[in-house]
Amino acid sequence: MQTAYFTRLRWTIVASAFALGAMMVTFFIYDRWREREHLMAAAVHDASTSALALAEHTEQVFTSVELMMRHVAAQVNGRETLDDVDRAALQSQLKNMADGAAFIDSISIQDRDGFPIVNSDSVNPAHVSFAFREHFSAQRDDPNRGLYIGPPIELRRADRKTEIPLSVRLNESTASGRFAGIVYAAMPTDSTAVGS
Image 1: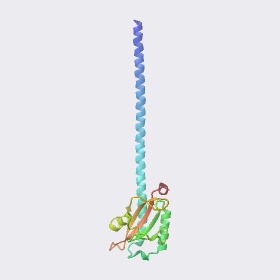
Image 2: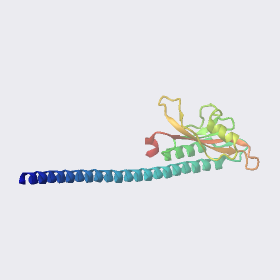
Image 3: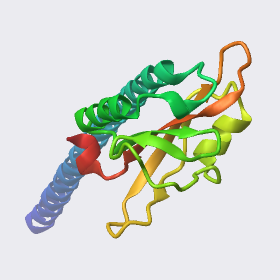
Image 4: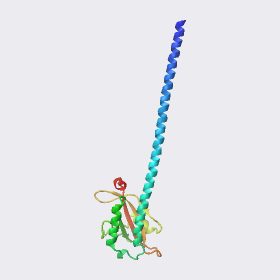
């Protein structure tokens, strides 16, 4: 009889030990799951915070570029023709702007036919029309457009850089509102130029 009693006791102890082990494993798994959930929540929070900071920074960069472009536009707006601008002085100013802003590769003024009259790189830029580009036609076709931010375009240079085209409309006069051209800025898409 004692053997049956000890056998039952042994099985009770084994079952209790097994149940205790199962509970410990369950608590361990639950603890790992809670830790994972906490880490995931922290990662989501960090990603959200980073995304908000990046969005705010991007908005500030575009606002800064727009203000620079509007400053240039204010100097040439209202003229019947862009032929009488002081190209050397304007080129110097555009070069200083482009050199001083890490997020601008170049800035130029294009006439009503899309030909650059001056840019940050040259007083006499190449006589090539950009009237076919969306950044130009968007301003030409909509007098109330405001800042145009286009999709990245790949340049035909050897380095194959891509840039985001930005443009602001120029008018002959505030009264007529007739299209006179655009102020164009190219924003590089590579993170080293934008982030520096």
